[in-house]
Length: 393
Image (cartoon, rainbow, N blue to C red; front, side, top):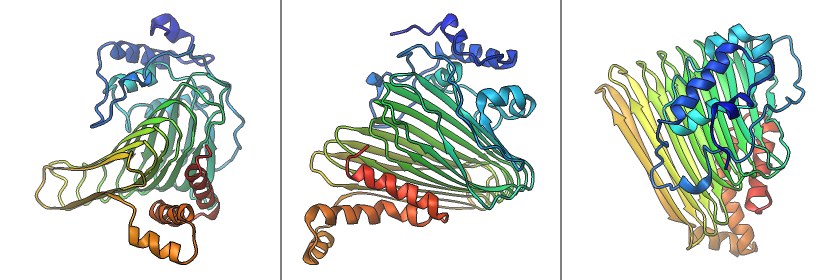
């Protein structure tokens, strides 16, 4: 195991990296030595190797990105050179503002790749932006930091495909998403990477009258620790997080999904659905939080888990933290087995038991796919879902 030192940190730097960015790395390295591991209820991930240097972390060569006059889409390294002022304005200033735990400290100190997307004010895209995570060689360390900024009045649909072909020990992926006032973002994350363990941290900051519709397909094959958080900081802001997950084999996925209402008349929705197979484990921790002063807000969530094996285990933990009276808040949670009557009905129509099970799962998770309005993105979501069900990752 490699040690986390200042020398190892310096090998991580991007070419011609600005001094202020290197200083952030050094500050994060100091925090790494004193911060604690993040808390994920009912998930024991201590032996997964997260937050440790499995291999030398060196900057990755960015893949080619499509150019556009309407918006900026480039690698993080390129953004530091070509759009430094813009990046410096937002980097760890809105969606992520501090190093709250050891894993975010590690990811900040040793980031070696990432994507940067910026939509200028009032830009309205009709075609979606497709983002492919930077591909690495086998066993290469990846610590990525991704950034999406929607300036005032901008509108777009973005699909992020995290479908690494090469197996690795660990991956660390951090994302910052900023929606300025009156902007709208339809964001789809499709996770299908093959690392043995992955740490995912996605944080969104949503301004006045802005709207985020966020669909996540958690279809990776290794152990996953994921945190998705949307902060409604502007009046009448809206965030909906749809998370569909499938676990197979001896895989464990632990997920904290949180929406925090900071501003009056904001609306937060969490919808999570998971399917557990074989000897795997899935934990949904849904957290709806309303801050004092956020009157007239709505916070709703549902966490539902479907178990297809007697050896599988799962938890659906809804949490409401409310510090204001004039609000509407509610939650629903369920962990159950496959409906035998539903299965019998499908088999009575001539379907085999395995096919009948797949149809039930498709209907259970696929409800999120149906809500994806763009046909090409919807098909990508469904294709990865099918491969996961077939254990073909």
